[in-house]
Image (tube, rainbow, N blue to C red; front, side, top):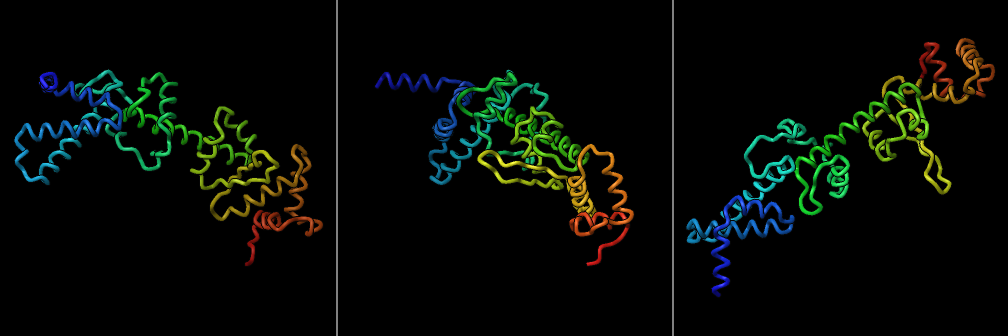
Length: 274
């Protein structure tokens, strides 16, 4: 009993910031338990033990929540060489303007192991266990959002120029250092891109990405792509034949599909009657 009493006396001599440090070093499962124990001690120490039970519970919950908040804030600053709340944060990537992430930048399905691997590639020190510092998570989301926007701009420019590209052709244009899932993720942000998938013969299905303006030019873009597919690439006579078709009409209308006919009417300035 004396030994247990000595241990209790020794624990009461631990300074508050040392207990915060101990709380910070615990795992996510251990932190709430320790915070509640600490809150119970504070409630009893400051004479709240005589309060009604519901008020004691409210005090404990409030104190425990405040302790966990302090630890979260400490965690967000710890990898910059700070412990506690004092000092100016030196990480230029974290500022008040970026404190709140947009909903489209929050990816709750990102595994902590992915963020840890990303941090390791950039030389950021992250513990193998426990909670990942908040500023690291924010930096991961912000950097990936910027990469996604830049990739989407490249894809938009490529498809606006070429009309449509296969997946392999798109890779050749934007660079093959972009993973397939990143390309598909960036394309989801472009409403004007149509994704066409072919039939698979055991492997991945072939994919074609097509740029289609969402306005009155929809028919022209789609039909123009049809005309380009019907003409053999690299033949200078193709454009001459197309010019004759536009000027005088096809020699045999049955050889031209409906989209091409609509495209020719638009080029002539004729409106399609409904």
